[in-house]
Length: 113
Length: 115
Image 1 (cartoon, rainbow over the protein chains, first blue to last red):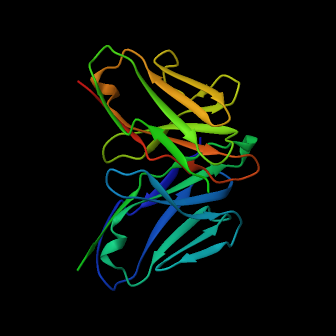
Image 2: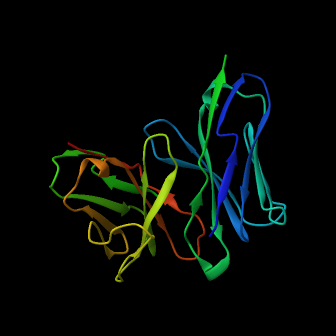
């Protein structure tokens, strides 16, 4: 059974600081997704990582994937208040060609002025 | 492109009644649709996967007779919560996937409150 672990689960940081959210998963996968969720809202797609070594950047967020280590990171650069949200990683297991996504528990990010 | 809608966005119903939630892909044909449930301050849990014209595949622990899923066309899937109880109160989110595209496109969610 695929398990996805995110850490930290809660992150409070000051504006202007950098930090990294980690996403580990337990079985083979070559597709990893990062989503943002604001309170009371659905998911907003941030990144789709499809291969080992993939790196994608959008604004102050950068995501990377290491399939050998079964690890993805979401790096936040010079955080601003607008980045406050809950961030989820989700993994699609390779086995069986499953289209299902298994989500991590989420990281609630609060960026303080 | 790739917009998914849900209706209603929120619903309050009395215990024992049934509620139907619609999920539509507005500008693409969805070969597969997924239904998730999210309790407050928790992650998304996949309930079932549905493909157009075939029976839904439910995740372990999800009652098929309670959560009826119908994927009637390539743009519409419905989730009916039958004989709802307060513990069914949750945020229900659907997503849709089109053929040959890895990404799932998420709907805005439906908040169900059972009183």
